[in-house]
Image (cartoon, rainbow, N blue to C red; front, side, top):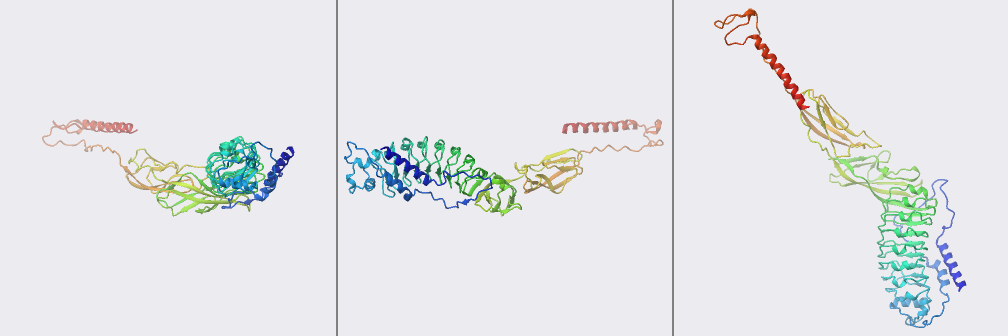
Length: 534
């Protein structure tokens, strides 16, 4: 018995090593520069399958394990599903499946029955020596009969309508599990597993890898076409060598930083913008970084414009070894290939897209992505300026949709406001959009204000400012007088100094005082008005 167990252990170890080439290889470093890489092209997302030929050594060696006798060995086994009964009879060399005994089931060590029409695993509850179960492409809905089977190590049950893997929580020694194209939604039953090295859950309803965070034996994980977005549960899984997750929902590879055995990473058709972590994978040999879709921040296209420039498209990407992404399609690239110039933009456009692509290392596979920007139209928010007055201080602030004239570290143009056409004598327009000064001349002035963003896009708007003449006080006219003036006949006698003295006319001195008083009053009124306006 001890010899049989040693043989089994040696066989399992041999199969594990054979199925994991390179696992025990010395981990190289990037000391001599970027490694040579193999591309995983789009459409090459097939899942690795268990090689039955390589596995035949294992299945032959375990098929003849000697089983101890039990009192009910010769009782007929209860196997309701005829397809399962036939599969067991074939393995156990029983010519009549209806004559299967409990001993036949207890001695069963593997089932290899894909596409067999199996719907029910009932009867396997007593298969205490079952180690390998290959039942892909059947109609199995429940794994419950497998609960607690002590020797079960490998299960491939892809393309079955299974929704729950709870029974696997009672089998912590499962080391190989394929459940692709099933309806499972949780990996919780795998929490605490101590042996799992390959897991395939592609095309399932899985959304989280969190239960795998403590599965330190995990070497390969495949979850393409799932809604998984967070790789943080894989952080620190130092044996991980292969991660395949095309068409998932991944945007951040940082949790994989520093994994020394990682040789395959396939995240084609995800949302990754930063692949600088690539530098930290000394064993990397195969990558898939193609066809990322990245949603970027909103762009403000000037109202009415059918063209738009963005000079810093590639700034949202991080490449290894200091490389920079490059605009290659979807818009005209700027002279440095880091920006894009769109033309023919429809007035009702809601987004702009551009394609970037660059080799990860010289001559190696590409990292490509489509970047999409939501579009909003930039407009002037300020109405016509209020009227001004000659000689009086004036100020008015123009404004455009918030963010259009904002500054940034990289600038193709000095953002802000300027006069595109026309002027108002005495007034100047600051870069902040403030028109200020003291009007010098009356008139109705038409001018054009230009707002410029940091990418060089401009938004012009025509305004009119009316400047009035202001309040001008005209003093009364004083009639000329002379010392020899002769009073009109019948108007009285001449007074001293030559001024006419009449019974009804005001003496000239009083008239002069009245004029002075009027002028003083006008000055006081003007001063009061200025204080009020201030």
